[in-house]
Length: 79
Image (cartoon, rainbow, N blue to C red; front, side):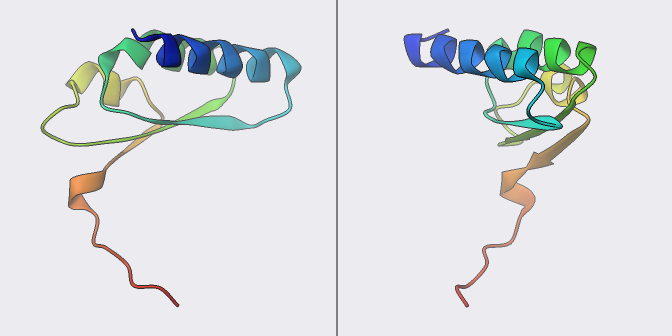
């Protein structure tokens, strides 16, 4: 995991312990975030994942309460 990824995990853990959120969103196809997803759920929070179908391992997608494959989404036009 990169330094930026590690910093994101530390920030997420702070949010979990502060209990100031109901859930967290992980926008990544990187399976390195699987452990974070499980920790978030263990704390009783929801996990929403977003990533690309071709790059996301099934285990990571399954570890989220909901996982959205971005390549399945239709682009929206501005208002």
